[in-house]
Amino acid sequence: MNNTSTKYAKALYNSCKDSKSLPTIQKQLYNVEYLFKKVPVFRVILITKRINNEEKQQIIKAALTQFSPIIIEFISIMIKENLSNKLLNIISRFNRLVNMRADLQKIDIITAQKIEKSYLDNIA
Image 1: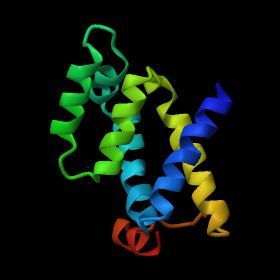
Image 2 (image 1 turned 180 degrees about the vertical axis):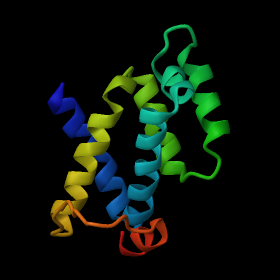
Image 3 (image 1 turned 60 degrees about the vertical axis):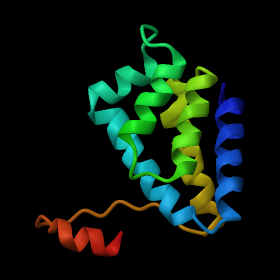
Image 4 (image 1 turned 180 degrees about the horizontal axis):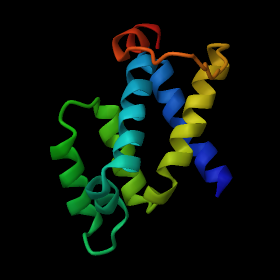
């Protein structure tokens, strides 16, 4: 299944890099990842068998109106192909591709004092 995750991550990356929308898509994918991890209703809608795929796509389209059409289409494809359970892995691989191409490295910073959220948003 890793090949599948890599294939979809590369396809998403290639569709975004040409349109110069990588930063926007990457931020929105972080939001999708957050929703999947922290909002049980979002995750259940994607992975449940009780809702058919067409209804899932309608729900996602209605719920994510502020998101790029690329993100909505990407999630719709994950639903159609029954790959919703691989969503986090695909997002992770997509982020690795973006960071590799941008020559960025992920680092962890440990501080003695808590850093304000506004400061973290500015450096992110």
